[in-house]
Length: 168
Image 1: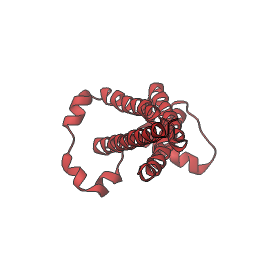
Image 2: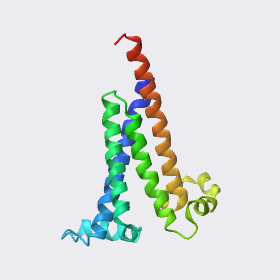
Image 3: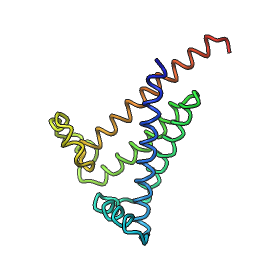
């Protein structure tokens, strides 16, 4: 059973690590006014600024980078069958903290943001996936991260029980 849960969790953690590090790099480049001479990179930078990367602070960049690093460490620890849950927990704290920090910058804060969620949006996944800047999409991503953490916890518990039963 651990094998069935381990590898999807590893792949999702890899995607989360790459997305977090890419977000940190895009926001850092926007904050640092870094211009790359390649047209493709300039298109990505302009779309990142339009998506809100230009409104981020260095604290956001640091939290995104820390989340990416901790998600990567959790992925490696799951591959090596060591305790990956705690690294995931630190990554989730960084990612969730960055999300809560960005919501504090809005008018009403976190409570007003959650109260403004349109729960009917979750019935139409294509609408949800079309725009990742919405609160509903961000909450869905936080939910995916929580499910991956549950998988990591289960895999760690099963592996621990296995090694304890072997008399190690």
